[in-house]
Image (cartoon, rainbow, N blue to C red; front, side, top):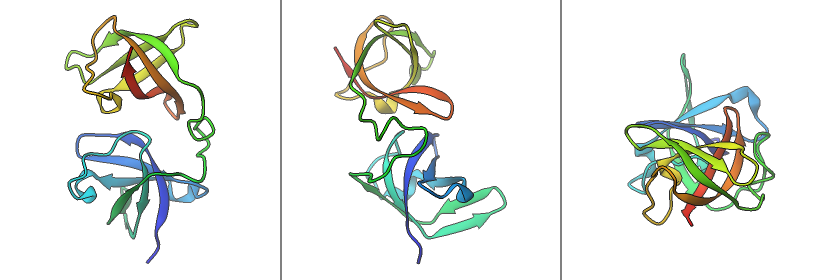
Length: 150
């Protein structure tokens, strides 16, 4: 049985997509939320052990998945394993459903995508709130991880 270290790079309501380090041939691997056995849905940046893989016409899908705490490698779109210092910003946009929005960094004005799955301590996305976060460069642009109020 083959197992792989992977990192979640995209999250949806039923499944997420993960990338395996140093194995671009696999592409994005579908990981269903239900595979995590009640430990909560996938979150952007989660470190996983996945496998075995089922190869479908739509792409590979993990048949099992486990969260891990430490990643010993860095995917090409990360900032050296999220080692960059925390940033500060203000919520500048919020989707009507409140599940995602945009943070504008202060100072600097760089914009970051933020999903409600990254909010910690019961925080909500509210226009004008001041937040701190870890910046992460993803294939779709900048995202905010581990977002905290204040």
